[in-house]
Structures are given as structure tokens and as C-alpha cells.
Length: 600
Image 1 (cartoon, rainbow, N blue to C red):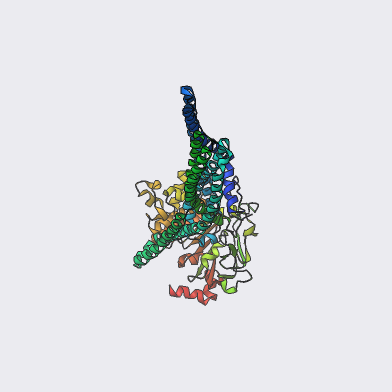
Image 2: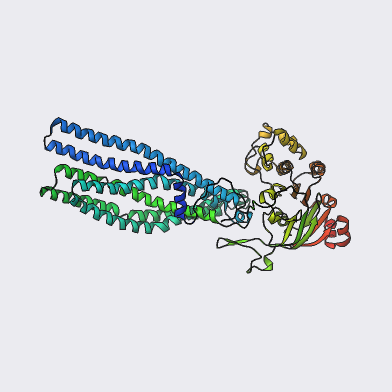
């Protein structure tokens, strides 16, 4: 079973053994809709064949001079056949379209749940544009796979077979030409499908590449403009768009060589000649000749549908493979639902911890501690320290020393390579991931806010619905209430994607309010007051002293006032813990630590 960091209790289980089985399990989830579609398709094919037969009867009635009564009966049969076809078609279209929408919805839900369950390592190695292409365009392609492709293909196959059965009611000798046509068409379709498959795969891949490049450029538009790289990015996009266009052209070249339409033309000519021969021999009547030609005429639309649908099938299978590949990509962390789930006291112990960022090789996670990894892969080495409940631990060191990486090991954003991390004397890997992360709050240096209201962003970290009064209380503690109320809509103000409507200091104060509201037992602050002016910082620090009482805090900071007041200071350099202690101890014992204050 694939490991995941997040699951839904009542999530439907699909067959992941192959792409075809996966698609089939999605479709067979709604057996009632599928059965309705199949039965009405048989009804449509039968009604269509009856149309040709009844027209033949009408001609025989005229030739045999059966009078008005005979013509009336024949006309009523023709009307009944057309009305029956129309009624079957209404139910058939409704069933297949509802089925297609449900398959698309369920596929998107399954993919989204899978993405939520992947680790940070996985997401750090993905291109956002490619993920979006899979979650939107590829998923939508599966809708087209069901309707119209699967629907019209099923109709086409039945429309090819039912007329054969109907032709036997006229004269079995008329089957010779249609059977030769079907056999020839089968081999022509196989050849067409084999030629189209690699082109369809290339088409989906080039679209994903183009989409990923576009997403990266839009996300980094400030950098693009800052370095005047518009011409280079335009050339890159034009190259990707050209590759996508070329794939479409190759698909058109393959489609242009579609032989079944030529075979159909030959079939009409040969079938008409054969029917006339049997008529001249006195074997069949004029009405049977007309009925036979009408039945051959019903074969034209299935052949045209198959031309269009095979291309859709190939693109849909390529999309399904890309989606299933993403779903089945292994993640190194597991939700551990049966793990420890209790209230934390807040003791944190690092025991000889080393860590190296994992790399994905062959679809499996290869950690730095694997046999073929070297010690140079490690970004943290042999880290050991103890933080008692309620203590504030300041982590200091130059950029790239591994400070942020160290804090990400605490809530298992990443897992240690060697050693272990204990919270309340329990290995973090033995905690339920939900309980572990639910009691550890993090305020990153690069604040992420959602394109939602201010109130929704503050309440995001809460485990349940939060009253407006609590949201405002948290904002006041983070010194955010005043600037929030300066907006016309107050807490209902939409802040734009990633909080672009706010200044850096405002975004960080909202993040601090969000952490206050989540009420964590352990709090990680990654230089969270770097964008706040000194006056505001003093106000926040006063609020923090009261609200952080009883909470263990890991504080990454360069501010000397915060470092001095910490209960424990960790001094890091090049991924190693080179000194630890109180401010006074390190000033007396560590020359590197003293240099920090000399530079200030």
C-alpha cells in the first residue's frame, strides 16, 4: 500500500494495477449508469437498423401494389423506428454525460487527495505548471474519454454489428461484402492506433512542458522584469509552443492516412453490385436491395466516429498514465494513524541527528543515508541538544548553516537520516502525524497567505470553526488589529494571492496571529519579525512573553535582543552545532559567538 501523510476515512478505493484497470474501476463505480447506457445503445442500434428495414418494406408494398393499408402500416413502422431511436438517444446521452462528469470529478478528487498526502520532499521536486496541467487538462481529458469517445465508440461498434444481424434476416449471402469490410477495417484500425499512440503521448508531454514554463514565468515575473529577460522568456515559450504545435501537426499527418473511410467507399460500391446481382438472379426483392443499402449506409458514421475517437482515446490514455503516475509516486512519510496522539508537554530532544535532502530516483525516494550516498550529502550532521518544556531556544548562525532545515525536522516536514528526535521522550516517528503537526505551530520567514479574506487566513491553522471574537483577539495579540480595521472591509478584506495586497510586516503579523490562534504546544519562529519595525516588534514581543508561557519555542533570529533573552542558544556553522548554552556561557566560551556581537 502506498504511504501517505494524509487520508480520508471514507475515500473510495480504485484499482491501481494498470492504467486500463484504473480507468475501468472509475467507470464501474457507477454500474447503473453504465448499464443504462449499454441497453439504450443496443436500442438505438436496433432502431436504426429497423429504419432501413421498414423503408424496404414500404418499397415492396408499393411495387406489390398492396394498397393504402400496406403503405400505412409500413409508414407507421418507419415513424415508430425513428421515435424509438430518439427516445433511446435522450436517455443514452444523459447517462453517458452524467457518467463522464462523475468520472472527471472523482479523478480530480483522487488526484487532489493524493497531492495533499505527498511529502514536502515530493512537492519540492515538482514543477507547479506540470502539476496544474495534470490536475486540469489531463483530468478533463478523461471526461472526453468517457463522453463522447467511449460512448460513441460503443455506439459505433454496436452500429457495425447489429446491421450484420439484421442483414441475415434479408439474405445471408449479402453478408460477404460487409464481413470482408469489417475484417479489413479491424487491421486498418490497429495500424492507425499503433501509429497514433506515441504521437498522443508526445502531445500531452509537450503541453505539460509548455504549461510548466508559463507558470514559472508568471510566478517569477518580478525577476524576469528585474533582469530584463522578457526576450529570453518569450523565446523559451515560443519554443515550447512550437513543440506542442509540431505534435499536433504529426497527429494530423497520421489522421490523414486513415484507411477505413476508403474501405467504406469500396464497400458501398461492391455491396451495391453484389445486391444487384442477387436481385437479377431473383434471390432478393427491390425492397431488400434498398434495405441492404440503407444498412450499409449506417456504417458510415461509426467509421467517422472511430477516426475521431481513436485520437481521443490515445490522448486520454496518455493523460491517465500521467495522472496515475502522480498518484502512485511514493512518499517517504506515512500518516501513522495508530501512532501516539496525546497532549504535548513540550520537551524536545535531538539525539545525534543528521539529515540529507532526498532525491527521487526511479520513482522511489533515495535518502542521503542510503548506501550510495556520501557524507557530503548531509546538510545537518550530529546535532544534539535538549529543550525543556516552556524554554525558548534561539538558533543562530550564518546563512546556509542549516537553521531552517533543523526546525523542519521537528514536525517531520522531512525525516532524519540518522539519529532521532524526541518530543516528551517519544520519537517523532512514533507520533500520529496529525497530532504531531497539530501541536507544532510554524511561522516561516517567507509568509504564505491564501487568496481569501483576512479572517479566513488567521483562522486557517485552527482545528475547528473559530468565532470572530477569537480571530480578533489573536490579531490584537499580534498587533494586527489596527491595520486590519483600516481597510474598508476589515476582516473580510480579500488580500490577493500570496497576500500581495499587504506589506511584508503586515503579512508577518497575520502569520503570527494565525499561530496564536492555533494554540500550539511548540512554536517555531523563523526570523518572523524581520520585516517589522522596531516599535511594532517591541509590542509583539510583549504579547509573546505572555502567550508563549508554557510553550517551547525554537526561534531563528539575527536580533541580538531576542538572542540574549533565550534560555538556550544553538550556534550553527556548515550544518554542525559548534556551540550551545546561554548568552553568558557562549560569550565566555565561544569566539565565533563573540564575533556576532562584535560585528553588531
